[in-house]
Image (cartoon, rainbow, N blue to C red; front, side, top):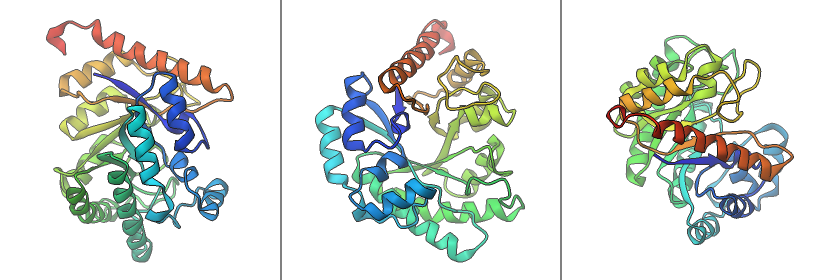
Length: 291
């Protein structure tokens, strides 16, 4: 098993700058975070709105210099493991906003494919605790994903639905399994965010077991009771149990750290790299029969 990092560890930095920086520090398996992706654009209005309010509704395919980024990543030997989409409301109760969310997520799928990645990570709904939790939420989400699955299939991609922590629906493994199995399990999977899982009181190990073979992507970070998106081993997660669960379900994809950046950029990346290497070292100490 290998590891990588999300570009979110280099906040506000365009991919044209972030990718060489990460490769110089020994990171080649990389998630492109939506923040860095938008900062890579020459569309000043799009960047300004996102900086001000995290509003990406104006995103168009032409806004992202995919060819330039693809050439840079190829020259550096970068593996763009996954792309993190913006927060579009795929289960929004308003039909018009839901249709717009579908259109914008289809745009993200095309960008994902053009960048050479095969996995797009999405959320169930906008990050707010008031988002409806009734039975219509999973139905709307599954309906949206069924439409997107056809596009993902055409582009050779999968969509990974991430567990959240702020919304009443979508934070539990069984929520994601319900959505996936009601949409298209061949092209829709789950992204397990370990910090979010720990934050809502469900251990990452137990969520791995709930998700089983639906697990196709990860966001690895710790939670210390107050902060998440901190390096593994700096919070309360039982990483030994988490690795045991991954081994039991046969997960073999790269573990991607989604760790916040700091003002000390180089130290932050190297500390996060060391923590991710520590996870793999812990995995390697296990008996072969358990792997």
